[in-house]
Image 1 (cartoon, helix red, strand yellow):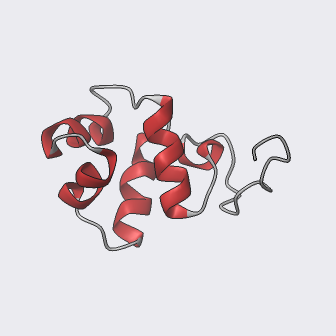
Image 2 (image 1 turned 30 degrees about the vertical axis):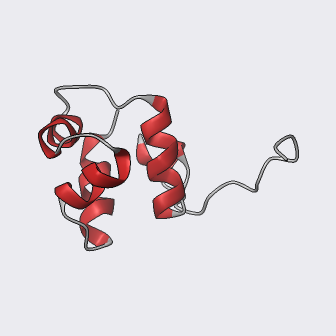
Length: 77
């Protein structure tokens, strides 16, 4: 996983680790461990970050360089 991207997008949006930790409902220390790659980020937390930053999980984890999010699913109501 491209952990540098998680930090870069946070900084690009002028958030501090403590801000994102609060949004994700984890401690700042836990979020820091996500950013430095000590702990894996649960998929639910990645989805929250993707929504926050208006991007895709694929972008956050480095599978694409396309920052634009995918279209909304027609299956979700």
